[in-house]
Every structure is written in structure tokens, then in C-alpha cells.
Amino acid sequence: MKKNIIAMNASIMIGLGSILAAPSVYAESISNLEKQKESIQEKRSGVESNISETEKKIDNLQDKQMTAEEQIAAIEAKIAESAKKIDAKNAEITQTKKEIEALKEEIKVLKERIAKRNEVLKERALSFQETGGDVNYLEVLFGSSSFGDLVDRVGAVATIAEADRDILKEHELDKKDLEEKQKAVETKLASLEVAKAELLEIQKQQKQQKQEKDALVKKLKQQTKKHEDEKMGLEEEKANLAAQEKAIKSAISLEHQRLAELEAARKKAAAEAKKRAEQEAAQAAAQAAQAASQTSESKKQSSSSGYSAKSNSSSSSSPSHSSSNVSSVPAVSSGTFTRPSAGYVSSTMGERWNKQHAGIDIAASGTVPVVAAADGVVSRSYFSSSYGNVVFVTHSIGGQQWTTVYAHLSSRQASEGAVVAKGQQIGIMGNTGHSYGQHLHFELHKGPWNYSKSNAVNPLNYINI
Image 1 (cartoon, one colour):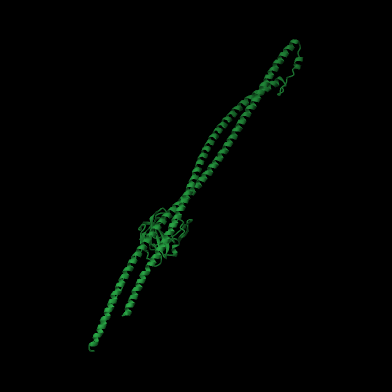
Image 2 (cartoon, rainbow, N blue to C red; image 1 turned 60 degrees about the vertical axis):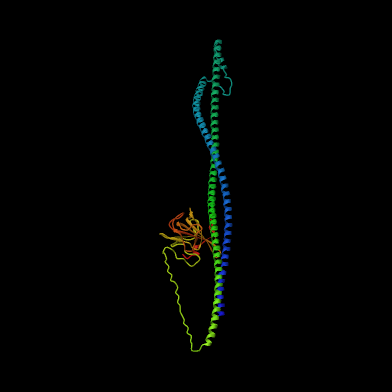
């Protein structure tokens, strides 16, 4: 009897030992979750620092862009001013060319005058040097027949000589005027052409400067757009990290709640075990006393009295279980992760369209439920311009943080902060966001999700699809 009591107490202590051992498991889980939370907080701090640096880069690029645009405006003003000057020079050149045409007519008249004067001089047979000098009229004078004739000849010679000098003087003036006008107009035209060429060269340089500034502004805009996209991605990563931190806190709270419930259960089990042990010890003592009394009484009775024992048998049956499986809902597998939806893999992880495809696509037609790949907490549930309707779930498995992403859903059935079980429906497959045709874009990250998706792993290495 004592052996039975000892064995019974030993089994109770073994049971209590298993109950007492459980809190250490939960405590270790809480410790791991706390470490994950600290890691996420550090990453959030780093992301916030990157956002700040990116904002500074954007501000710097925008300042440069503004400066370049102001320089372009100044260059455009100079180009417009140069264009006005060129137009003015073109007008002057046109006017000068008209003057040249008019001068040609004057030259033509002067040439005709000179030609006529030459004829007059030839007819008079006068020899006159264009450089100046007097005509020899001695032969004319010596040829006179009388003094009166001499006087007449002297007067005539003087008159002719004076007329010739006037003709020659006018002839020289006309030639000089002609040369000066030709030279002045030609010089003016050449000067205008040079000035125009200089203005055209200046305008060419200004246009080249404008092209360079336009190219610079275009480059600055592209860089600004790149950094703005990077900032948006970092802000999304920051939001996801904040959501994951919240989910981790929720998981820690759940672990503390489970630990408290386990402690209460442990105390209750210990009290009940103690009470049962005391009751069984008292019952055993009573049974021992009764047995001793019966043994003493039996010795007094005769051997004709008999004793018979009756045995009873009992049977137990296990309850039957029936399960109904909806054809469009995938069966929950026994591995760490289960298949997130029905359908076929239409695209695998890897390079696609010159970009990294950080997950797999599972396609199917009709109304296709999407389920959580493992137990976890919904860290984000929102509409993204790229992911469309998307749900992020944070998991803590064996001290390792995991993140699953379910994108392009037609509808979401899990809100942020919700605790979901493996195989629990969280949405319906769809075609929202940057998507072509109904499918589920599924990502698996060993750690938190980030903008560069550096923690992404191939789901096909972890899930049998």
C-alpha cells in the first residue's frame, strides 16, 4: 500500500514538473521576442536616419535645380536680347544693301559723266595729266597771224584752259566721291556682317549653354525622382517596421498572458495535487485500519465462511472526428509553413523585367481564399499602389522572426494587430495594384520586410506547392 502511495505521489510530481518546466519555455520565447523588438527598433532608427539623409539629398538637388532653372531663365533672356540685336543688324544690312543698290545707280551716272568728259577732252586733243600740271599752249599762240589774232587766241586759250581745269577738277571730285562712297558702303556692310557673325556666335554659345543647363535640370529631376522614390520606399519600410514592432509587442503581451495563465494553472494543479495526496493518504490509512480489523475478525470466525470477489470490466471509445475540406482552401500542412492558396505557380522568385521578383505568384480563377502560412500577428493590412490590397504577417518561430506578404488581394479579411492561426483565411485572391491578371503574390522574409527586400527567401524552399 505504501508503495502505491509513493508511486502515485511520484506521478503527481512528474506532472507538476512538466507544468513547472513550461514557464521557462515561455520565458525564453518572451526573451527572443524582446530581442526581435530591439532589433526592429534599431532598424527603425537606421531607416529614419536614411530618410533624413535622403531628404537632405532631395533638398540639395532641388536647390541645384532651382539655381539651374534661374540660370536657364537668364540665358533665355540673353538669347532673346541677342535675337533682337541680330534682327536689328539684319535690318541695317538690308538697308545698307539698298544703299549699295542706290549707289550703283549713282556710280552708273558718274561713269557716264566721266565717259562724256573723256570724249570732250579727246575732241579738244588736250593732254592733261591726272596728277596735275599745265597744258602747253605755245604752238597755238605762235600760230597767230596778227596781234589781234594773238589777243583772240590768248583769250580763247585762257578760256579753254579754264574750262579744262574745271572739267578735270570735277572729274577728279567725281572719281574721289565715287571711291569714298564705295569704300564707306563696303566698310559698313563688312562691319555689319562681322557684327552679325559675332552675334550669331554669341547666340550659338548661349543656346549651347541652355542645352547644357536643360540637360543638367533633366538629370537633377531624374536624381530627385530616384531619391523621392527611395524616400517613399524607406517611409513604407519605416511604417512596416513600426507595424512589426507593434505585432511583436502584441506577441509579447500574449506570451505574458499565457505565462500568467500557466502560472495560475500550475498553482491550481499543485493545490489540487496536494489535496488529492492528502485525501488518498487518509483513504489509504483508513483502508489499512479496516483491513487490519477485518483480519482480526476473520481469525475469530470459522473456516466455513467464504469470500468471493466480483470483477468489473470497462471499455472506452475515442470520439470520431470528421473533417470537411473545401476544395478552394488548401489543406494545412504539417511543416513550418503551409500553402497560402490554391492554384499553380505562374512566376517564380528571381530576375523579371530587369527587376528582382522577391516572391512567387500563385494563379487561379474564381473566388480563391488566401490563408496565413503560419501562426502570427498581422503587422500591416492596407492598400499599396504597387502591392494593391496587401496583408503583412509577422511570425516568431523558434526564436526567429519571419514575415509573410500576401499581395494583390481583391479583399482583406484581417486587420492590423489581429492574431491569426496557420491556415486561417486572411483575404481573397485578386488583381489589385501593379498586377496583370488574378493571382497571389506571396513573399517570405527571414526577418523583417525592408525596402530593398534583402531578407527575402524563396518560398518554394520552405513550402510544398
